[in-house]
Length: 343
Ligand SMILES: *Cc1c(COP(=O)(O)O)cnc(C)c1O
Image (cartoon, rainbow, N blue to C red):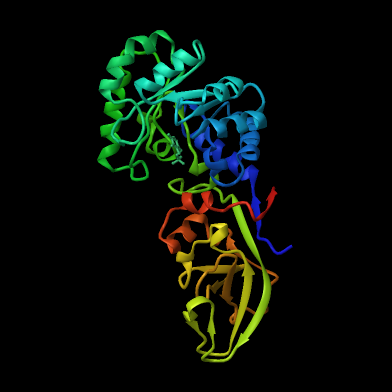
């Protein structure tokens, strides 16, 4: 079967969750939006629930409903986009907790689902989602009377602990939740690492669970191995791939592996990325195409059956550096064509 093999180490995800949990004295939730950062929300969440995680965050109600089917009753599932028009049935049937972002969402929620749990999301400077101070002023009394489950906000620059936005957002969050008893959460992975001032009552890491920066001490979680479909022997002067951007300068062995930009292996790694045969790097030759990558394996002692594009020698963040992006995008783009093995 000529697909990549994506091996996902659920026990490493659990150890990463425990390691982040051990850095705080507060509850640690788990963010499993975008299908668990591409790794399979149902499998990841079930493993984490087994390890003791009781609160999960996703972006939209549809993800929450699928997660509820995977987890069953019990764990709390929070919806970052809040209560959008048309969400009421899913929120009710799957017992999801929307994080309300605007007075209109609050009014919609109270009208459609009176008594149904909700949280509040505050905008403390990221200007993306959440109640601004005037919005909060408008609904504060009515919202507090309904007993919100949680108040959250999100840090824009937590991957850089010295960034002034971290303390600015911290003080704005404190002001907005002052004189309420709502349990609060400000920290994702970055904020968890910054330290206790940002922890409040709950941290909610995502990327750190999956082995990504800024959690530099995370255990690696994924291996992506691409099978070699064919091998080519080139004479000097022959070229490889679309637009003939690679030209052999010596007798060259090219391995064609199954996987391409349709599998989240961005075309931007053409010419700069490497695949790995154990501890030996093999450079990508020419353009990454939709389903195939050509790899220069001339310097390998033999052509292996498969080459690794993600492995302990090349983390999602390493590959991201070659693609000019971040580890989050590498993981979230992996797609559904790889054969998935959960270890
Ligand atoms: C994605 C997200 C998280 C998790 O962030 P990481 O950087 O992956 O840890 C937490 N909270 C909110 C609101 C998010 O959107």
